[in-house]
Image (cartoon, rainbow, N blue to C red; front, top):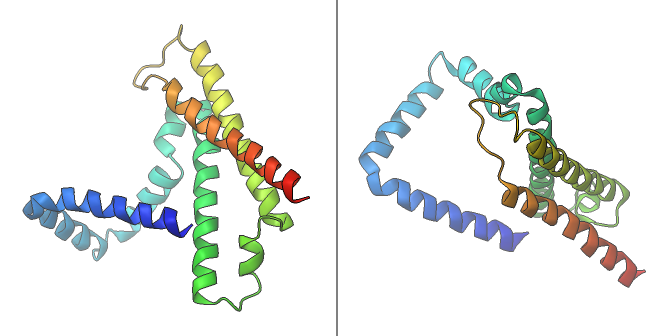
Length: 174
C-alpha cells in the first residue's frame, strides 16, 4: 500500500509540475476555484459534484444500461481504494483501534466478502460492457465514444488475476 501510495504521489507531482509550468493561468484558475468555494454558490457546486461526478447523472440520462456497467466497474474500484485508504490512515493514526486491523486482514470475513463482491462486480461490468459493445456495433448510439476493447480486457484481467492469486494464496497457506 505504501509503495502504491508513493507511486500515486509521484504521479501527482508530475501532473502538477506540468500544470504549474503555465503558472499564471493555473493561478487564475485556482483563484476562481477558491472564490467559488467561498461564495454563495457552494451548495450548487457540491450538488453538481455529487450528482454529475460521483453519481454520473449525464451518463445515466444518455444510457441507463451503460451507466450500470460503468458503475459496476467504477464503484468497485472506488470502494476498494477508499477501504484501503481508510485502513492505512487508521493504522497510522490510531493503531490501537480495534476496527482497523480487521479492515487490513485479508482473512477477516468482512473484507474477504467485500473484496470478492467487488471483484465479481468488475468482472460482471466488463462482461456486460463487452457483450453490449458487440451488440451495439450495428445500432450506434449518437454522442457516445466507441468501446475500448483493450481497456475492458485489462480491467477484466486485473479482477480475474486477483481471484487466481488469492486462490493460490489460500491454497498455499492452508
